[in-house]
Image 1 (cartoon, rainbow, N blue to C red):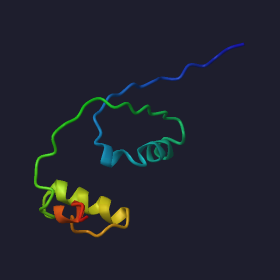
Image 2: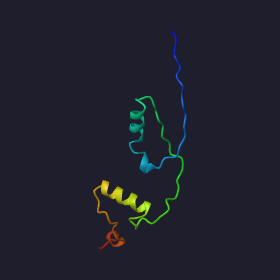
Image 3: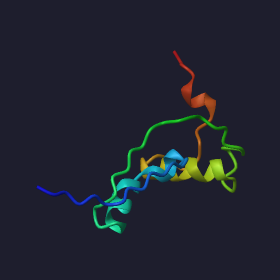
Image 4: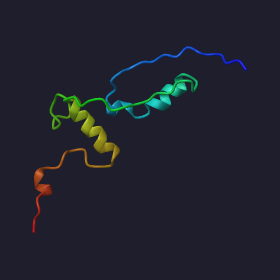
Length: 85
């Protein structure tokens, strides 16, 4: 019984969570199913910018997430969360 060993490539990268959705499927499709990625959380990093500014990168992420979840695109004011009893 003889086994042919193929070359293995190990890579390490930091991928923002927002961009990781669908990564495994795209990588496997691009490699004909031969790649087997393993995603592991490594660290937090501050996302610079203002979430209330739709032209900033954090604002764009918030808008995209709210749209995907079917929420209003504008962030509600704090008055919406005050108990009015």
